[in-house]
Length: 320
Image (cartoon, rainbow, N blue to C red):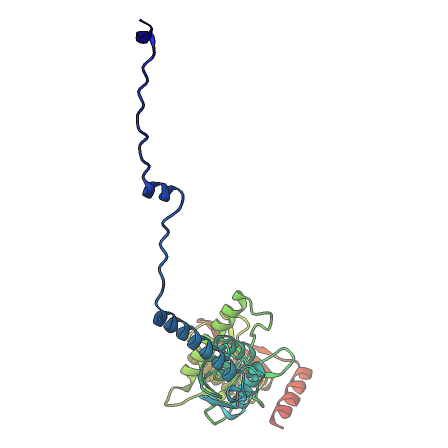
């Protein structure tokens, strides 16, 4: 009975641990791939070549070989070419041609020199820059409020006076325009000046048509008010109001009336419906304004005797 009461004990053999899984948990069995010697040599050689090329580039671009020596300008007048070259050299300084910022150089030239409309810049290594220029051309001769004459291009950009800027076409100067905005170039002022330029060019076109061009009979175009244009008859102090259209016909009417008044042709004045023709013929030399834009009649204004003398003095001064 005592032996039966003894507890029986079963001993189970411990399971053998898997070495590979244990190794994985403990970070063992790490694979190390050894790069073959020839491959390492190739990688090192490539890196050395890149480094050598970079050092050579830095040495070359920093050497005298790449310093700017020649600037070739095409498409511009002689005086403008010299100004552009001076600006380019000042911008480049000692910077090598290879490292020069061409976009910044282009912007510098276009903003600094008003007569340049646009430029194209190209580098020719090792030491040359080539500048191709689209030059602004004088289109309108403008009288400023201080009396100075200045050229504007077709976009209203001021180019310079009659001494520094010469039109490509030779010949007498065109009629002088006045009334252009001289304030800061706000969008409104720019738009107004461009409208004046369009009217100026339309007058040039109409008055230059052959046969019988009459452009040389105009010496000033007042464009202060674009809907009320006034033209001054050359070699006189007489202004003709032509309004906003039919410029040539109205101007020729003004000339015909002025000539008829000065030669005493009352019949011709009546044809143009000039009031009081007899009085007009007696004061033909005092006419200073002709309203030719009206459809019903031509109206004249007269200067005083003192104003007549001043006008004659001004004409003599212009002739000299």
